[in-house]
Length: 130
Figure 1 (cartoon, rainbow, N blue to C red):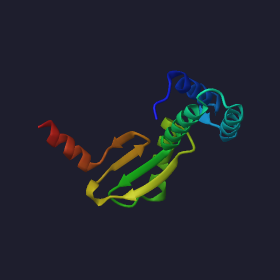
Figure 2 (cartoon, helix red, strand yellow; figure 1 turned 135 degrees about the horizontal axis):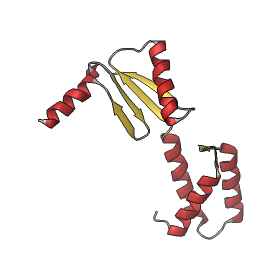
Figure 3 (cartoon, rainbow, N blue to C red; figure 1 turned 180 degrees about the horizontal axis):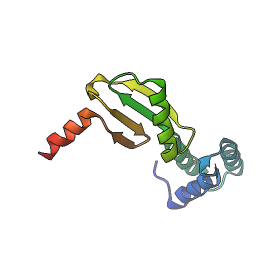
């Protein structure tokens, strides 16, 4: 569904108002959505769908997948998560996977960002450079 520029701007403004210290506040979001549904301004359904998209993107950006060739011990996991928390902020949703095809190192996905320090990734980049 294509939405108007005004509806998209309104959704972005509401999304910004629903944040506290750079993080999405559930209570504020719930209040804003309830108020929007009750007031039913022009194009409110488009505003709601744009707001839903922004919230979905924000939640996806908090998901982390850490892939390693071998199972990581607890100290290594905590060190990696601490480093990611410094860069991306706290309250990350972390998932670990063992992928033997990496050969060594880590591949970390945070939202749309991919940090590839694996041996397989280095080999692939080397082959592409030739």
